[in-house]
Image 1 (cartoon, rainbow, N blue to C red):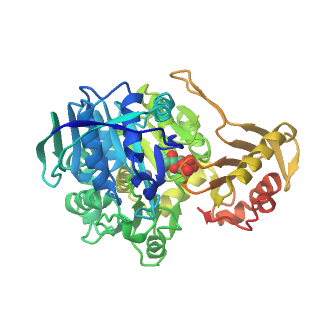
Image 2: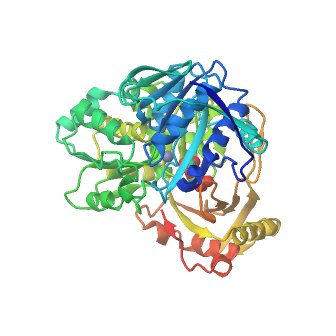
Image 3: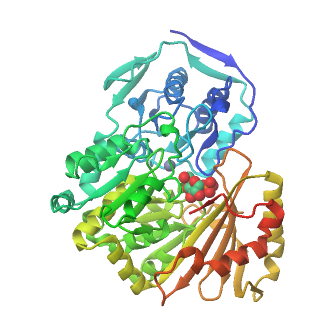
Length: 541
Ligand code: G1P
Ligand code: ZN
């Protein structure tokens, strides 16, 4: 087996976005595209020599081929060991846990998260650091810089490694340890939650439906929910991971998990419903007849955290991404704990979690997590809710009604305009930016602006500053409007408009109705219809 130095040249647009490098699968399959990026990871982290990495992916189309390439490149650059999930599979939270548990130097996760997979879908590569979390900006910029200067990549000429059996294999001089992707993760969940109480809940006839959306969480959910906790067989649906996610869109929200929503809205539907995404880090929570927004879920979890064994001593603090609703802020205020507002993307939570300034974190985009790992964690969130329901012996509807009575309700929605022209999207944002100084005290769609700015984040731990993280407009009475462009899309630009209003009296309105004035204000301020020609959003969640 010999190592080849392959001559190459920089490929444009290899800049990692909100969550790693995401492109069309076909782009990743182009000559040298994947190889250039992997070699640039090694360069960006100061070399692979003697290091141990964790490697796995969500099983999407091209996962198997990519895993073999990464193994041969890790070996060629002198890595000592790669711990890889059996058949090349690892959910994102399981990979994060494995990096931490095994003291690895880092990990490579192959996934485009909730984006569709397949030859015409998306693929992605993300590098995580030794704390188990996504690489911070300093590392991703070093990787990006390397992609712009690369002239050669190193790869071992070797046959594919058999990843179907657990155990030790060899790729050149590098050791490859093939591990069961579920076992360690399941053990961690058992340490965090009261499995006995959840098992009793199922024993008493509590019914749930978990939709794995043909993605990675199927095997994890089957083992934990059905086999260990005793949920009825068949509670986990779409449980076999498929390379194209059954041609679906593995994003757990009311649009893409419509089957689940329909089942949960039946009068005799299950007591609890949940779904997860392509790589297992997102979650959707429902009760019979009720969808819990991710922002509300974070707030309810924070308010009930001490019912969970791992958090019974209380939370050190909470953190939410800026566009996430202010519901959790109210809980933090009542608990007297810190509440941090960070830019979009999980990488900004890592420092706060490491420094124990936050225990729970969340994003409006269906991501919640805690200090147990350094990624958001879909199944963990589901178990959290089950544990709370088991302890409180109430329904999701009752729990949320009581929550809103105590804290008021932050009606919330996100309107996405996908695939718009990049130039138009930038002009729209620039137009808003230019208006900011004139907005305070003005009235828009009947709402009075109290503050307007472009969000910048000063990390309290490492002092780094991240600018240009979205336009925020606060109105009197607690309503808020946020505009930002997506950093994960692979076609054109996606404008995200985050809408929120706060009420303490009427707690059971339809969210879009409650948000009517804020929606109108969004269009007046950004001239969305006029600029984009779109009469309505592509996706409303
Ligand atoms: C989206 C979400 C963001 C999440 C990211 C990765 O990023 O909005 O909250 O962290 O996916 O799952 P965006 O496309 O908005 O940049
Ligand atoms: Zn994901």
